[in-house]
View 1: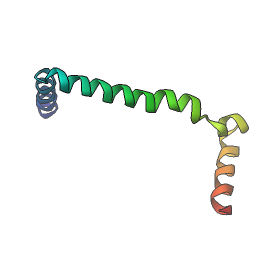
View 2 (view 1 turned 180 degrees about the vertical axis):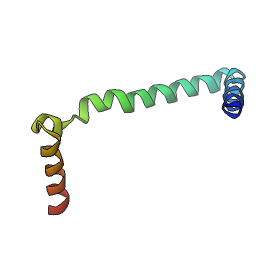
View 3 (view 1 turned 60 degrees about the vertical axis):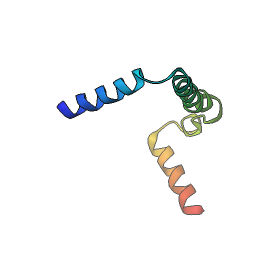
View 4 (view 1 turned 90 degrees about the vertical axis):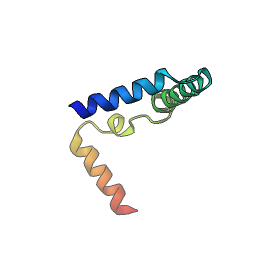
Length: 70
């Protein structure tokens, strides 16, 4: 637990001492990650298996069939 605390404080101190330019870059990176994982997932990666099949067994059988047939 002590190691985790040291690592946390190491990064916290590093982020506190960033220049404004570097801080803006980190904000841009975090916004891009949010867009990639949250927004794009909602619109482009829909859960088609959940919509087409009602049970886990039907989903599993579909995946197995797709893997075997290709």
